[in-house]
Length: 115
Length: 114
Image (cartoon, rainbow over all chains, first blue to last red; front, side, top):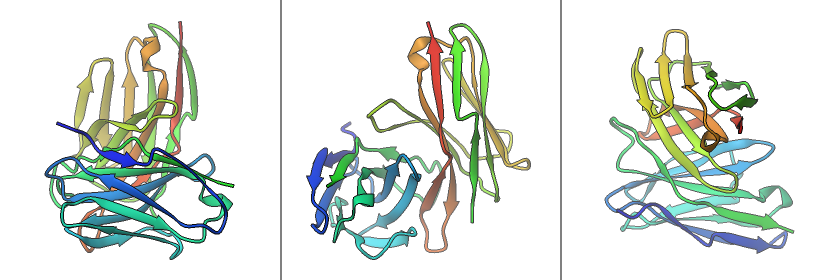
């Protein structure tokens, strides 16, 4: 079956702009999590959505937000971009994270560059 | 706050040799993940370990979990060049509102020399 898809794959933005990234989970999966990967901070949890509800949020400023639609597709938005937001943004899909096997499958990522 | 430490950070090894990557974590968890990442690519799921003493093997890779010691290991047997990649361990935290948050280690960059 098809894996997790993320669009766009690459993005270049200017400081102060905003950006929206999209993630389509594996068919049947209801949980979507977002992670940021940078050389300096590594992989960090942004937030998790399940059935259109944000259940958990990591330690990121309010400029980072997201949502999930009824078809489980998710978007994340970053407003007022800063140079430090340049990163690979990864989306992870899971059927559920409330019971085993807790498998999470990652998409190819969106590489965001802020200039 | 959960801390996850991986070592070594860099590992250069010859084909045919064995080696082990270690993953220590600071608080109790019953979910330990191993992922592989190739340069410029996403994370590929290798193993999910859910109980003390769990051992899983796939090809030349074997992962184990000791929840009492808060330690997981990824053992590489008879390394081949194709195993060159960065390997991450991650610890899952079940959260009050439900769901799961992964805290990742720093990664081990493995290079297998031909």
